[in-house]
Length: 223
Image (cartoon, rainbow, N blue to C red; front, side):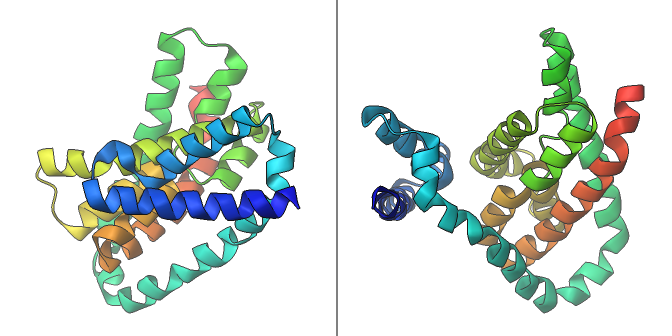
């Protein structure tokens, strides 16, 4: 019963945060971030564990697969555009993946973080299941890698559009590849708010970055 209640509460909170974001449209009010904060506060106030929350929350997790599959629609609708920009998309995603991993490694080394945390933060810019597998492969902590992935995704959704505006990046290729390579699924959801073409490119960039990261992470550690 408590699981169903928490599931309904999660949906209500998200709808409320979406309305708040639509009204004020401030970067820090991105629904994914504000909903997460509200739910964490709720669990803390009522002394509820993560396991209790997931008795209902697991049903939302099961929808992640269909949601990803649904991205095939904008991919199909803009397949000709994707073919046209194949090589620029491959190159931008490749270098975006390197920058994403390299920046995580650089900051981790700069603050002298423990080696296991360093190995967990490197795959922060790829989708959670892949990041967790990579972290496990390179002796990191998979659950901690998932946390860093969420942080990267939320920050990308918050500040990505501002950066694009400041840097005068207005093309679908630039916006889509940037959000997909840096902020994976959450970035792709943000790209969908901007346009279907941006979402299609972002979903391809998200997939490519996961492939590139899987190949490059072990090599980066060796260097």
